[in-house]
Image 1 (cartoon, rainbow, N blue to C red):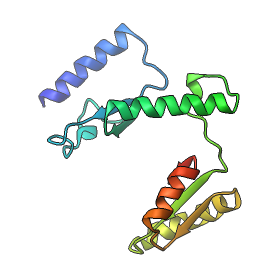
Image 2: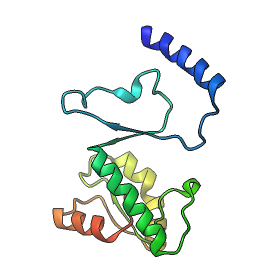
Image 3: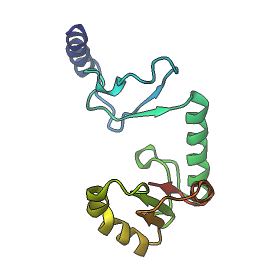
Image 4: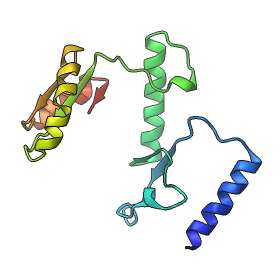
Length: 143
């Protein structure tokens, strides 16, 4: 109840004091003692774009990597466009434990379309740790 009241007051102040950024995103760096709590469900955070990251150094590394990728393909830095990825360099893993039949059925056509676009991936089978490492090392996006 108190958090909801605080959220309502904070939202009024935010709306009146400054315009909200178009692509505002929140990164949570949480201690092991509190990472099990559903922070994203708090009223003040509900509906916002949020990612959990293991540490600030990780976040800085990802930002530096995105900058290098943009520069390597000659794309000027424009914060509106985020990180540069090659849409043909993706990998998907769909239902590796074979226990999500409806999910597999729902995304099977999407996965087949992605395969035609140049992605690699597996459906309904587990992959080895080495296959996963290879996907992370060679692909721009792993889903």
